[in-house]
Length: 264
Image (cartoon, rainbow, N blue to C red):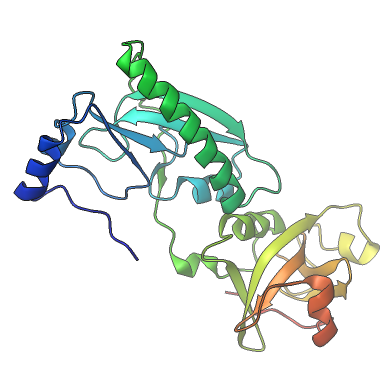
């Protein structure tokens, strides 16, 4: 994986200073700039951050927002300082997180929003129209870097929590479980509500009628799996070494009814 350039060496700082920049813009940079680098551009160093700060400072704000079930997120344009996403805010813009949003779809919408907002903000900076707003001290959360181990599904969790995990880890690292010891990646899924069939409704309560991970049904509509609370319908999945398939296509080569996906 490509590593971002470091501005800590004297040579790098000399090059940066020699550019006589008006502003330096970073996005998803992954490193804290040293104080000497922050002072080089005339208008400072500006960060495009994919959350409404101070919520979700850190490395994975998009995935953490989906995992937490946030209904809204957005983009914050901030002036960088010595801390981790702690600098004053120059502009913000909010969007809703849809019920079907994955980390990819949300990332793509935020990327377009960030591109629009940074252009507006740089123009405002040049014209002296920007008002810096310190971040509030309340509501601070940290979006820790995603660990691949988090992708392993624990079927004892609520179906809603598992659904969020599937969406948050699409396209990486992709939520997964085990079927007969083999990796099974889940790309798309949805929860079933209490108006489904009688056999599924029994699982909506606090005490499931089946062990979590049990496949209740495998039909053209999807693969229904018992969770600690509720039912998850898998819509798209992938065996190791194979391409992702819709549930209808997947079950043509697999006998799943009554099988049990391994818990974490």
